[in-house]
Length: 177
Image (cartoon, rainbow, N blue to C red; front, side, top):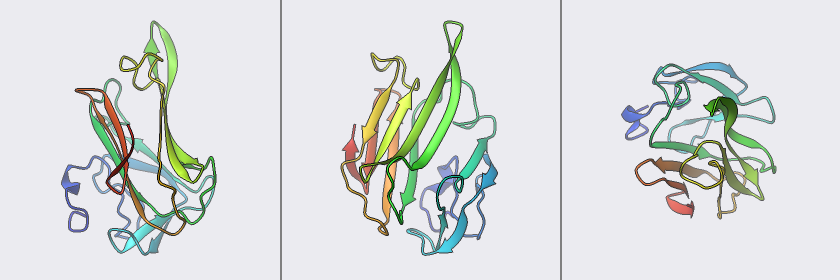
C-alpha cells in the first residue's frame, strides 16, 4: 500500500500481497487466475507472493485505458518489481505479455518476455518498438548481475518515448540500455 510503497498512488498496477490476497489494488487489472500464495517476508512490506514452477503464476487482464488493456501506442512506461528466486532455472518466465497489431493489413504478434538466462534476467521484445530500430522492433536486454537464490533484488525496466531509450536496472544500477 502507499504507506509501504512510496509513490504507489501513480501506479497503474500494484499487487502488494499485504492484505493476504492476490489482487490489483488500483482496480485497473483483473486477476484471471493465480497459482501464487501469500507468504511472510517481503522485500518492502511484510508479505510477498510465492510461485512454484510452470502454471503457478498470476494471469492478469487489463481494463480499457491501461497499458496492457488498450489498443494502440502506450507511450513511455515503467515496469518495476521485486524478485527473490528460490531457484534460478534457465527459461523460467518472470513476465510474459502477448498481443498483436496490424501492419500493412497483416496481423503480427507483439511479445514482451522477461525470464532467467544464465542466472540473470533477460528481456525480449518482438514487434514492440517498430520505428525505433532497424529490425522491426526486436530488442533484447540482458542483466549483468548474477542473481543469487534467496536474495531480494529490485528490477526496473523503463521506456522513454521522447528519445526511444529503453533501460533495464537492477537495484538502481544500469544493467543494459
